[in-house]
Image (tube, rainbow, N blue to C red; front, top):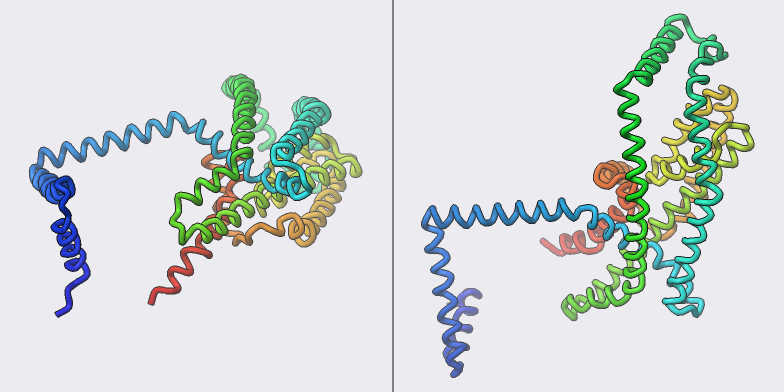
Length: 387
């Protein structure tokens, strides 16, 4: 007669307890079932069960409220962690050339500080000036629409529709409620700018800490795993962090190239607001896979107010660059990133943007890449061995 595994385990434990001469071991072994039966008996009473459920709901509400209160801090922490993982490949390259890790971190952050200073000194003032020029030029551009060549080429019905749309837009802009919203928006923007400056210092400090302690944090994570699984977990973690770092650096690099191309095209074609459009291109092209297409439509529409011919030239040139980026630039920049289906890229960008704005869009690609790697390397092999 074969004894079931559960029975054998129970009898083995009873034999071990019986064989033990330690009174504490025997007392603990006999007390544990009594406690279990006491809890089960207590659940038979509706009042006790309701009390336990109420305590559980209250605990869940308190935890949810706590997460909501510290949500901003959690965003700072997540962003700093991703920035640390993204900058780690640069530090490792410097380490490979004989530079110590502390010196490598200092070099990387000094380079980042120089880039930010150059942006604030040479890019930010022209962008602010061009924003003012754009706001001042909007009424003149709208007034000149009926005299433009493309408006004259439209059918009479289309012309009336365009004029009606312009009139409605003018009424909306000049309404008191719109002006009040704009004033409140400017005040909110000022407050947001001050908050962004303080948040930047917090994120930079956290990024420095995470980057300096990244190797020690990984070793601590590996030590928590069973010894038989540490090699596998270490390999998977290194691949995930490498993929995240490559995706972040690749996205920022592609957006910088995009902004440079837009700036040069505006200067060569003679379109207005080159610095402003370059900054807008950098932000929009952070959206993976679809950002360049979105800016193609936006840039062509803005250029259309200057000249239909210039808008057509810009659209053709930028479309050529998109093809070069897709088949030449992107494979070289994103060579270590995991291939992601376009549908998942779009879903991740929408979800990340809804949750965390531009930061969420930027982090969506590496997060999806990490999840796909875990599914391919852990979940799928475990399912394959099941029959």
